[in-house]
Length: 593
Image (tube, rainbow, N blue to C red; front, side, top):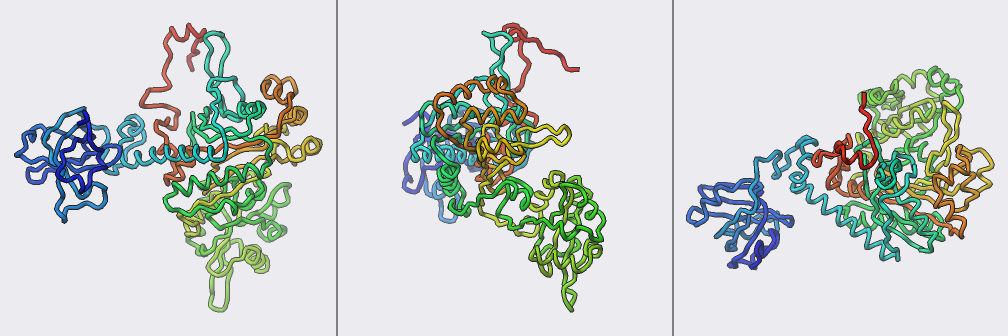
């Protein structure tokens, strides 16, 4: 017999009754039923009930066993009485009578209980992550992650992609976030960087004549943490293709993403890729207040500025006299009660705005009546025009925000989400996807008036060089994101592969040719030797697994995550270097005041 096990803790069935078996695993739970000790023995695969009575030669040893001890037992498989069968586990029809036991690893007192669903502070869970990972939900999440990665790989190979690995230690190449720098011992005073993404390398692979590339790529960005973003590193399905248009990228990656969600989405509806809408960035901002809309929610915001221009509601009327301002309405079907309207007004105030105006429509017996402060101020004709534009009726409401869109759009988008959830308008058990397209390449700093890149500087501008001769703020890129249920899960672009267009694009953002050559020398040089048109994208593995696992915290699907302060509590990182390490690297730490 094998030194540790003849079967896993999920294998034994009625067909094994009468056999002598060997199992190894952890003590999940111990129960004493009138002197008979029952142990739920757990390994990665499942659970088996083992038991020992006082007549057993090893009963005194079994009595000493405690939760999370790692043990090996030999025993005889017996059928459970019919009334004691547990249909929730594969081994529920049998139990194993212990004949011999060996303690493989005793456990100290536990800082967190593995059995059950007790809640513990995240600090405790991350400090003792190896215990936290033993819990059933975490085992399930990590298995899901592994299966998702395998599914992505299989599907990419089926589409004739080749997997290539790009360097982890490379040159600093700012791409919108801070680099993690690595000091060089052999070249004192110089630094490598951990790649924010394989962006330049995958483009260089296309320069090298490979037609399709992908990898499950680690990426490193020194970012402020969020619930859906790791503050240090993350993994993405990275891909690039030559001789393609934007639509070719969509047609390639959409069925891959949909297939993974269908395979691992636990029966949730997955929208057919052929029906995924392509929404211009500007339209997404107007209708949803975000470039990553949750399309399970049917609410679409609308511009209702004309109904308030010159109206009796002075706040909005005066706002509209300023350039670049507008009034947007958020329809709220079934939200027509003063209580709900007041609650949403309070929500806006908590988000830092003065509040949200509202109108709600109620049945007064002789007909419909518009209620709320706005209705009184703007009068029945304008109120009725708003109702008709929004397609609302009795029992419905509408909320209003005004000013420059950049000042209220974020809150409007959040309000739309809250309204959809609270009024049960957002469809559950569904994954809804949308491609967001036509991103602006440039933005203007409102304080300095300077033009800078708003999105990926490597994107090909729509219209090429000719587009760059006009207003920079009107230039759109062949850049795209894929949104799912309110999260961005894919981002990509058709690349700017022509040196003259690249130099002009960077010039508009204040970077001269010398600076571009200094920052992106390898890429610029490669473009001079017959660069093919190419493009690609990257899908966030962590975020996709988070959606499939039904959690909103990305740390629930990362094996060993950092906390929100970018600390590894388990490994005590970051840590202070030794004096010898600093001397070898020619570095000195300046104490912070």
